[in-house]
Image 1: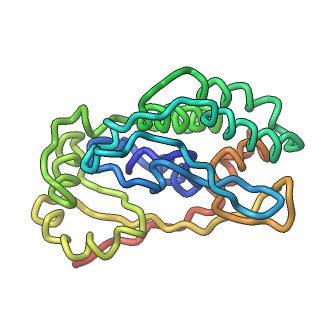
Image 2 (image 1 turned 90 degrees about the vertical axis):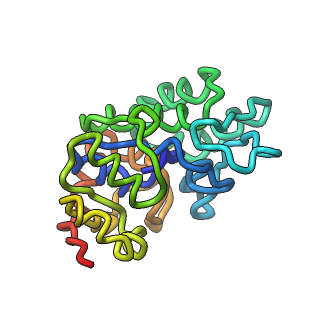
Length: 233
């Protein structure tokens, strides 16, 4: 999966189920996508936080080539928004210093920032899945042929995908079947948990769960897990 900024909890359930997780970091960057932004819970509902990046004249840049614009706006505004909306969360004081360090370490790479945040969240929750970057694996191609190559590179015979990719994976089913690779689709029902503001609103970034539930975060994530669906052509 592409390295996402502050992914939702289903992203981590998929990582937790995998033997090896591959960050798809050498595909084309999409401006204003989940790669660059996500949402936090506020008293108004879910509100966006977007990482400013250099994009002018860089139409075809890859995710791992995207540079963060460091200024008075970022990361200061993100940290302020998080502090204002989560300072009353039970585990805010325990985990906010680490989150602040992640955002203020001076990194210029969007993909590296995202990967560090995801790795930190996994560590907090006790997810120890091995992960790699696709850019390290020397796989070629696009869409399903690329995914098949990545599976071969890590000696995988099963690929667990998000449900959102079902349509194109069904179209390309033969690409996997001919190579002896089974495709499973991730099924997930978003569980409820304690939030600072009520009523509960799902699909916030992972820090919402960590700041509110702390050590119970992984247990809560797993409670939404359903058996994956086997993809057929």
